[in-house]
Length: 95
Image (cartoon, rainbow, N blue to C red; front, side, top):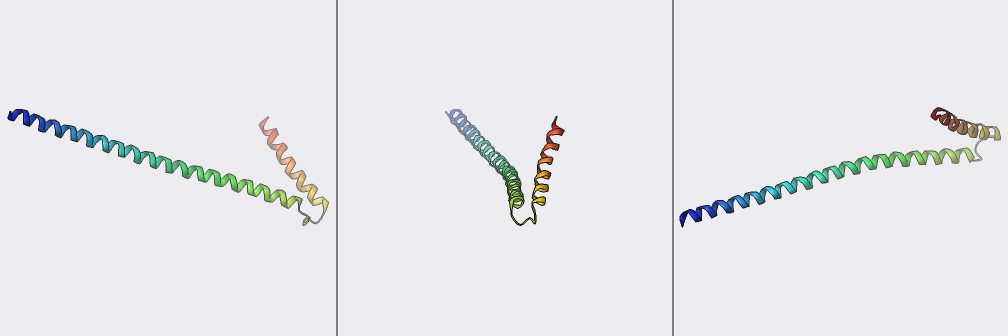
């Protein structure tokens, strides 16, 4: 009878240890997931910020070109030519 009780004691100890290790493993997986999610969110935020800055800059330049503050039609035409030739150079480089 005493050997059975000793065996049960070791069995429960082993099961408790196995359960504790599984809980610890799950906690580690959750912690790793949270860290990767935060890293991904930070990278996405930086990329989105740069994209929005570029689009804002593009809109500001377009408004400036179309604004009547430019002193004459020659400046507006020159600015439009510069913008269009820049696109043509990029297309020529791709080909």
